[in-house]
Image (cartoon, rainbow, N blue to C red; front, top):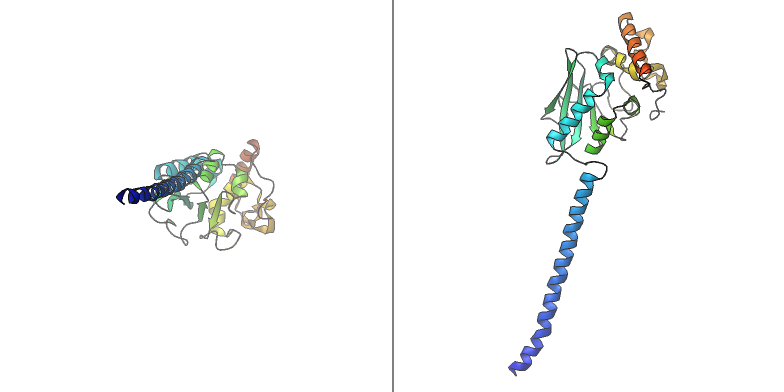
Length: 229
């Protein structure tokens, strides 16, 4: 009788062992899939998210490599938001003081806030920031801001909607830089009417013409705004 019971228990043990092996195999597949997805996110087309140091480096590279910014006036302000590694986002305040652009990491998502920042740019991924920093062309900036590489979030000079607020402050800080990349007359719907020569003081007009000439020499000026049309 004991011998018969032992024979009956052998299939049960084998079945139990097979179930454990199958469960371990399925678990390994799940873990492998998660790891593969994580690696893909961080390697294909660049990393989707970044460490604080990586994000800061790319933001500084973007600012340093974009000639248009040298024509922005002192007091220019922007907030750049990048998907982070370890926290949802890293934010960087970009300020111009005494002719120099200064980048600092901000503890606040919107830096100084929607009512204080002239512009707030939220990149869709770290890879998008890397690509933009590698080629900070006028075309990407002029036709950007609609989710291709980044979004314009509501801010003081880009309120909710699809167009910037072209007022006296915008004119003083940014119109000259605009001329480096595009003739404001080629922007549809008179979005940048405050930047027309007729509406600017002669001092600004002279600097704007200089910026336009540099943009032409470097062959970087954009003839039309594609995304806003």
